[in-house]
Image (cartoon, rainbow, N blue to C red; front, side, top):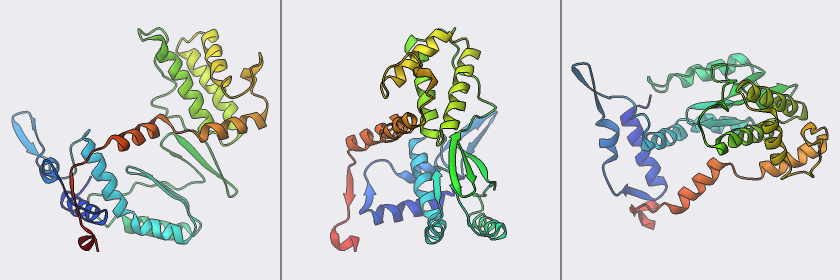
Length: 272
């Protein structure tokens, strides 16, 4: 969990580096520190971390983690290795000894008492909903399925608008294409999607129509479209889809464009 004082210090540094000394509105310290709740007959005050579900807490986590990871990122950059993070989930590659890696990770866990790394090392690991595999130095990706959540999706017999079922299929197909770095992985995932949908009472004709509708946007229409037995067509289609922003990316771009922050920027002398 976030250490509150260090998080506020990190935020102040972040704002100064980016040219702002304050943002108008309610004090961030109040939002972060003055969180109270009742349990039974007692009242409690949160002394570590921030309120769950708060958009500010998520922003503070990303700012804090950006500063926290600086030394690791610099080390990974120098050695030509990969480092990626989504909030507090991290994926990184390593090409030195396992002993050196364990030493680094154990050392990182001592930086802040409230932040402890739970790590796994392997040639094949899940990161969020992606399975990443090192095949003799070649990194391949496929869809990772969490056993606790799948193969369950919204049942076709549920009382939802029709477009919900169509969107489930479209999203599943697009995820399969984006994540499947090999034609073999895609075909496996395509079969998995169909079985998952059948398991949740989706009619086979509805499934096939939705598959056909999706793929016909990218490749020529054919009664054998669902077979997708042309590897070259698959990679051309995948390249086209990867070049498009995801709905999440589009939303972030739109939110940033519409943002109107009333702030007190530093002048050039102060910024120096």
